Length: 225
Image (tube, rainbow, N blue to C red; front, side):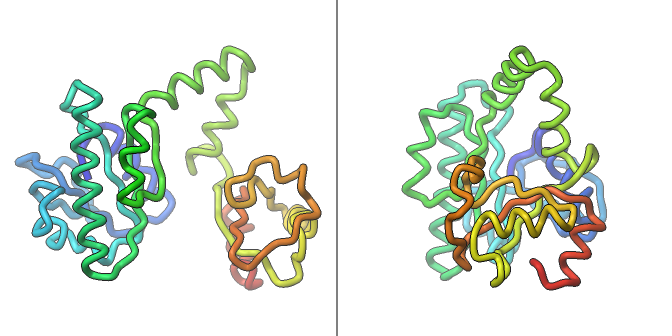
């Protein structure tokens, strides 16, 4: 939802991962901004329930709300995104469908305003560039690592999988994955999992790993995901 250069970059990246994915773009531009067989354009107000239903949102795997790049005032841009997010959540509750929603937020202080509508993930619009610039200044060369993590075009992909029954602890999972050429990056939202290696893994836990496509396909065939 919402067209901007960031939206184009995101669509390019998603199609790079999943060439057969169907993407629905909602905006109020008169002409379709992205010409691709797998991208379907819906013209209208994304906070309007009729438009959301036209976009078939109830069958969406993910919903991504981008900040309106045409609004200069960050408070107003976040306000519009909040209105859209509220419409998505109201519709999902009314229809009994759990939608995973990601929102681009211009100001970190506004994140708390979104929490009552049960948004799953937040992306800070401006902080990412600032933080990456700071990292590059403090630790030269680290930006290449971030590029590899962020883009399929640059290296291994981040994937998510559930623990196998035999992986009783984080240590067991990390060692088993490493033996198959897979790097365990995080457990749930913990990057510092190395400090709690003997923690028991639950079936509901999510392991985030980095590996190449061929390795991921091999894991799939082995029933590891």
